[in-house]
Amino acid sequence: MFAVENGLQGDPRLKAISDAIRVVPHFPKTGIMFQDITTLLLDPVAFKHVVDIFVDRYKHMNISLVAGVEARGFIFGPPIALAIGAKFVPLRKPGKLPGRVLSEEYELEYGSDRLEMSVEAVKSDERALIIDDLVATGGTLSASINLLERAGAEVVECACVVGLPKFKGQCKLKGKPLYVLVEPREFDDITLYN
Amino acid sequence: MSGNKEEEDPRINGIKTKIRVVPDFPKKGIMFQDITTVLLDPKAFKDTIDLFVERYRDKNISVVAGIEARGFIFGPPIALAIGAKFVPLRKPKKLPGETIFEEYELEYGNDRLEMHIGAVEAGDRALVVDDLIATGGTLCAAINLLERVGAEVVECACVIELPDLKGRQRLKGKPLCMLVEYR
Image 1: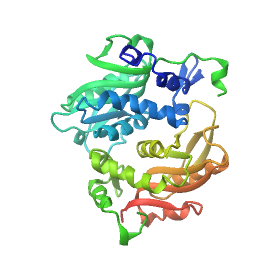
Image 2 (image 1 turned 45 degrees about the vertical axis):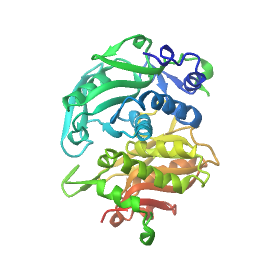
Image 3 (image 1 turned 45 degrees about the horizontal axis):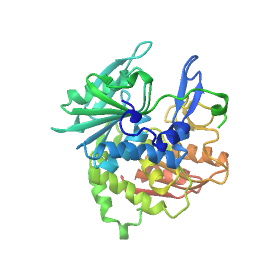
Image 4 (image 1 turned 60 degrees about the vertical axis):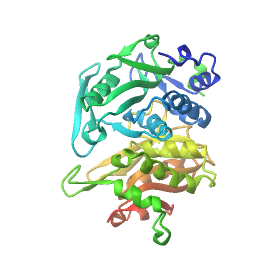
């Protein structure tokens, strides 16, 4: 579900957020129009809009845990967690987290990768929000949902700044709702040299 | 903060008690300082950010540079609170646009830190953030990147310092602010 479908139609903050994202063509490989959120981070007003919109949505949903996917989920997750009084849990590439971890494999275009979470992260009766910058196939978010559910948490929603148009409407990932702020930007010559 | 023991803010002990030390990670002999347990305590995490924000809000900082990946956890909340831009300093090949890189030494071999061209401008006043300073190699690379584009590095900020590794001396004369020492 996109923000515009859920009460934020016409909200000028969404345009400011979208305008602040830079499209880098053919990264990391030919054919991919990479949605670069680093330019959004250079605009403190637009970055704050992202956090404010998510905080407004989640502050009354009794979220006790915000999980962020390495590495760009580490940028958006903590400010939201801090504002709503939830803990922040990093979901990491293999071998980075010390101590005992749960590990979940997920598919890439060629081969697979793993995501890990500390077993200490989840106590009982946790309501979790999962954050990443962008959702494309949903593979990473699905792995994240699995990790949290295996640890006994209830995943309330997944949230991303950018999402492919297929996630409009009631589209769910593993039965969990998905909330997205903006669609991917188109590439045009003006964007590249901003 | 920063070794000023007589006036230690009461929030600092609360943060220190939340840091988990994991022996022999990632390899034997290393006492790993795990800050993820601080992040599990909303008050301790908030106190960490508040301490840095209180220090930097009136210092006219225009950019907070965070070192991948744990610097991405602490840097953005500080940047947002003080109205500064956030710039991620990343491992090679992660940033999509044109970048500059700075090499730094590891125990065996080298690694690189990259920054987007155009993210930081000449005259920017910069704060560099990471979770921990050990040898200072990564922070030094970060300082170099920022200075090469004409920014002024005002200070480096870390939650934890390992003073025995003398990283403080490798910061090209830049001051270090830390909250917790581990000897």
